[in-house]
Amino acid sequence: MTLCYEWHTTPLSPHLHNELATLIAAIFEDQSPDQAACELAYQQARTPLVTGLAFNEQVLIGYKIGYERQPGHFYSWLGGVLPAYRGNGIASALMEQQHDWCRQNGFHTIRTQTYNRWRSMLILNLRHHFDIVGTVQGKRGLTIVLEKVLESHN
Image 1 (cartoon, rainbow, N blue to C red):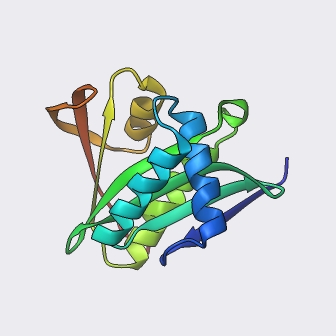
Image 2: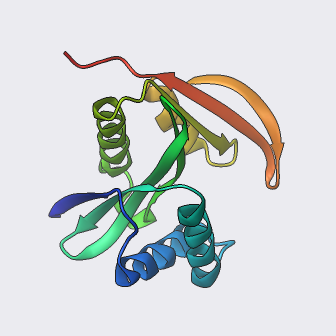
């Protein structure tokens, strides 16, 4: 496996946008590529997205997307890795790179949400020092809200 990571702070090219939408639909099977593409475009129109992409050779296999919630506070919105590539540290690498980017760009807090049914994501967040700060009723059930205060790397 030859892994490569890219980070984008501007909208993705149409080709990468479509590739990412296809990947999202492959990971979250309750969404079509067209639905994922529309949701990505909607979020990008609302606020600039910071998008991390993981490739094996030229194949897109994972991603991590977030945006500024308010000054100093970042929201880690979506992320995932194709099932065949899980267990190789790709999600952790994307998360660590996202947190490094946030530190370098003046963010001090990251918030994310997940569901109990996605336990691997919940466990990943807990391993990366997120705290559970609450729950809210979401469209797919009870949503677990997690937050992390970023320590500076000096």
